[in-house]
Image (tube, rainbow, N blue to C red; front, side, top):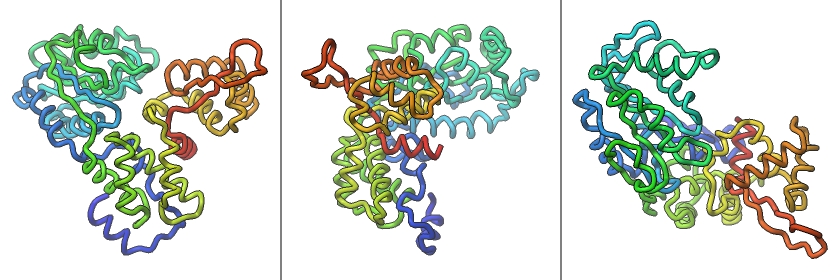
Amino acid sequence: MNLEERIVRRQQPDSEPRLVLESDALNPIAHPTEPVGRGLVIEQLLDAIDPAFEDRCPPDCYVWGPKGTGKSAVVRSLFAQLDRLIGRAHGRIYTTTRTEPTADIAFVYTDGRVAKTGFALLHAVLNSLTADPVPKQGVSADTIRRRLADRLAPGSRSVVVAVDHVGEPETLSTEAVCEQFALFGESVALVLCGRQEPAAVTGPLEDPETVRCDTYRRHTLIEILTSRGADGLTRSAISHERIRELAGWADGDAHDALAALFSAGLDAQRRGHDRIDADALEAGTDAVPKPCVSLGRLLALPESRQRILGRLVALPDADRNSVSAAADAIAGDRIELSRSTIERVLYELAEAGIVRRLKVDAESHVGRPPSRLEPRFPTLVFDHLTATG
């Protein structure tokens, strides 16, 4: 929200009895075009890809750091601007039949949570480099590679590809990403973004630069919460003191801080309050477990799995005291999946760390003790986003 919009909103009375006005402003995985408090990281990343400003392909790069440190916000916004100012500004738009682009270098951002296979990754890159949409059906991976190779002739054209969220349980590894682009040699530079330390994952990269994102300092996190809260909540919905308290609780993790602020706003709104009081803030932090799975992972899951998680969150505690009981309850709750499939999916979600299985004390139980299912993600926000999404 720009300055004019902020002023106009204050001139107009609130027309609806809502505390949460703009979900995207509070959504931890909705990133602003100008990341807050990451100037040094942006400069380091620009240094790493500096050869691109002379139409030369830069070295590979690995951007890393814990969850909630702004990696995605920086890489996504920076690549959008680079593509606009350098790539498309030089006329880099060509069709699947016209193979003579005028620009020497392009910038493409891809989300590894969406492009989960080699084919999907190459398709996303090719689709970004063409004016005509590339079909997903009836096209082989070899065809995609051949078309991409036609546009990346050695020594004349190149592309810098950012692949976000590498190395997560549902995404491609560094090795798998590098394997997809090995055919194109020096025509492709990779900027990979992940959480693991460089020594563990950069082996397949070609002498990469590394850029680290540390956790946010408390004052920076306060600035993020204040700015996003001003855009997403009614005016005076939360005091500066509560924002400071929330920033201290989040311990430098912007994802968890925003998820808790969003949750607190939803809790206060459901209770008909016009401010986030101490009880609402406590409810908000309680709805964000620690450690917490990123909402991005949840919203990238197939719709059927999101529905199962939504039903799981809505179950009373007694129905979550075992995987079997949860599967029974979900299967009878208007969901078009067999009970055995639901139970298998619940085990797989536990294996992926999205839910946690906790042993339940049951003295009368014979055999292996049952395992209570506990969500490891922001339940209030997930429920709100999937219900409105």
